[in-house]
Image (cartoon, rainbow over all chains, first blue to last red; front, top):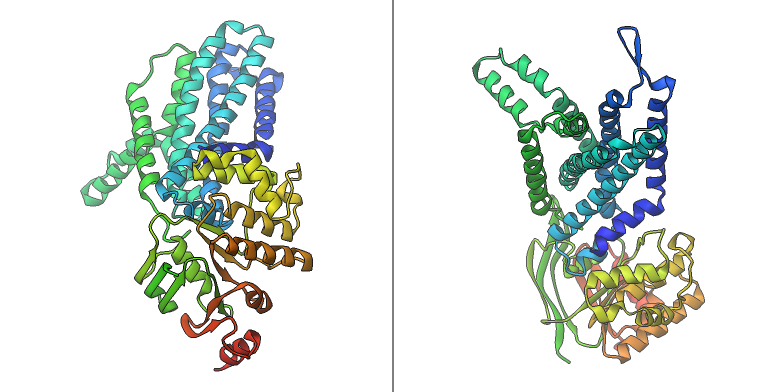
Length: 251
Length: 226
């Protein structure tokens, strides 16, 4: 527990959450002014009900980027600074150590996500849409699932892979995940062994953008995709297992 | 005195390089034991294997059952946004023993190493203060074996004197201390026995008062030979 608390304390004392708050205020403020209004068919749309799902996806994207940035460096930094020496030498197993660090990352990303969503809530109230506060609160759950997926996957990769490569792989996963449906269409025409391999590879890319979209669906009262939600929990579980299993040779 | 730690034919290889080669040591309970050698002699790798930070390629390391180990690294890093007391509480929490989380107990350890429970953050600590904090956190579990990597490096004359006196006191309390240090005067002042390592092997042993030759001269004679 101390390791989890220390990860959270480090991010708070390094003012990371203030940066998140500032980002949230900027994004929501931009969407609340003329600068952020959408124009469809020459008609300006400033209705919060239309802007809200877009805004939620933007905030989820921001929080995903924060989750990725935090998780990329936490575990490698422990080994670079050799803080790991004083943890391993106290008989703490690698599984426990890595899981605590990953859990710390998840909690920090949740706090940062809640700050972003709270900013959104404040602006909704200011603009006279306090009736949607409940739905914003419920959408927070999907933000939490989304950032937990990113944190756990990134933490698992960062145990053995250098920070830069972990970040690159995660960006590829996120981009390919967002383009999953398009990739599925593109690969549908492929044949042969190569085609089959590519099709399977596309199927394996976690649909992280899909999880983020569920938050938008919720606020718009659209049906939720239960498969995407189950897949998200599966991703967290598999990545969690990897965090427990993957080891470093030396502290 | 019985052995508290025995290393039998321990070897550590990294790809083509042998860091420690067929090392055998017996460390007795209550003694202050020195690991000596030039840079790259295999001292730190030996310490890492004892602590479980690196796995031996072959050989055995036997530590008395139930013996607790405290470790003070050569280049300690502590979260810079914490105060000394917060660092102590953090590691005490990791140890999991509730009695060791007591503020008065931790404050006592800080004072024992020459620090005080103030609000100064680690980022404002001098190198010597960080070294003292490293020693203080190593004492949290009230260890039976204390492994100190360069415990007087970076300390001024007063700090060195203080730490050496503390080591003597810990020895009197019956603790076994393993020291890796380049400062041979300090070794002669506090250690009972030691080994001189070169290229991963023990090339000679040293026992306090066994010969007229100063340790420094012996070290230069042995390590300097090619």
